[in-house]
Image (tube, rainbow, N blue to C red; front, side):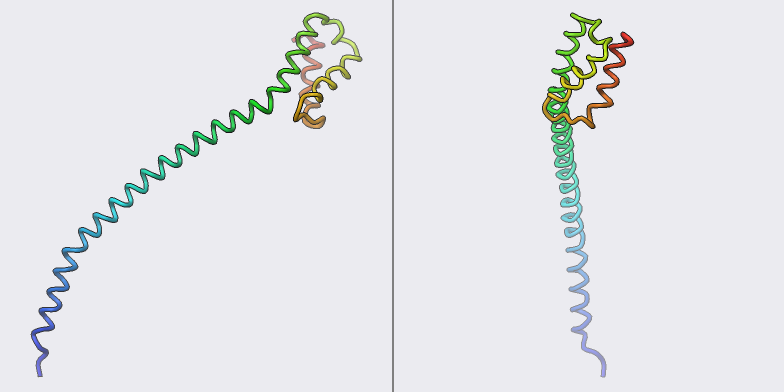
Length: 123
């Protein structure tokens, strides 16, 4: 017995349906992909800008107290340069530097040494 011709008709209808649906499905997927890429690029750029701004602000907030203290010490050094060529100036510089908020001795000691030698050598 031969298979009914109805089966061929169902297959052809399914094939036509698939041929009509696949391009539309592909277009929808492509559109969604490109919109998602565009949105993710925007989000990434905003995140990068925010991280950059936060890093600049945090760095400025961290170093500003130290910079203010160093400015004060520089004014004193301008008025009395001979004082910073003595041994007593070490303690003064150290006390000035660690008195700034967020400063710890282990972080400021190399910085202090650099400033001390620059004041002594006059460079």
